[in-house]
Amino acid sequence: MELSKLFRGLIIVHFVSIVAIVMVVPVDPAYEEIPIGIIHIASLIYSLLFLVSLVLLFRFKSSGRTLFAILVIISIPLSLGIPESSIPTGSLYQTYVWFGGLLEGAMLAIIYLTSIKERFQKIEE
Image (cartoon, rainbow, N blue to C red; front, top):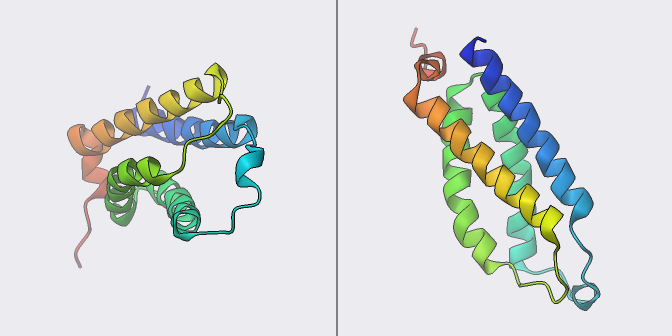
């Protein structure tokens, strides 16, 4: 299998795993009455930028590679700032979260350490 097809397949699987995470995340009634704060706005902006980075990666744009790497790094402190749920999240949700992290690590390795990195090089005219 060609590496670019594998990479595009990983992007699609990662998008599907994000949708699966959203579908199985438990709704915590303790946080339904809390007004929207800075962490919610940051999470929304992060989510939109992450989806944009996946599209740019799918099209092999160099800005997508940089944006994706930056967003993976930003996700660590952002996830630490999200308040902990008062109800158990369940093993299915945790499995999807870990699988998403696995996919992000694999995608980072592919875009920076394999021959596919040449497709992301900027063409200067």
